[in-house]
Image 1 (tube, rainbow, N blue to C red):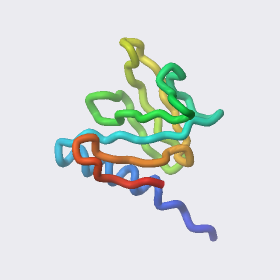
Image 2 (cartoon, one colour):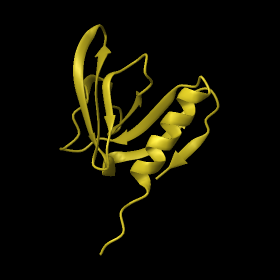
Image 3 (cartoon, rainbow, N blue to C red):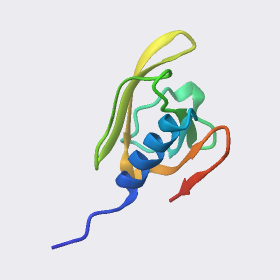
Length: 100
């Protein structure tokens, strides 16, 4: 039996920790062909996304994907990020988090 990655568990834990402490969770993403994000906000193949409760709707973080709806320049868009594309999660206010 192969061992599951700890990454999705750490992403969920830091997200929950941020919510409990009034902080804003952000994820850093390396954009690839499977990543669905607004292209206009991608810089150098990367994007940083606010995944806090006030910035997203229907946020789900499972072992394979981070998915939610959010507004970008006033337009609602669906965002889908494969877990292997998440390169980090951190609290905006403190910088505390993890790089993967």
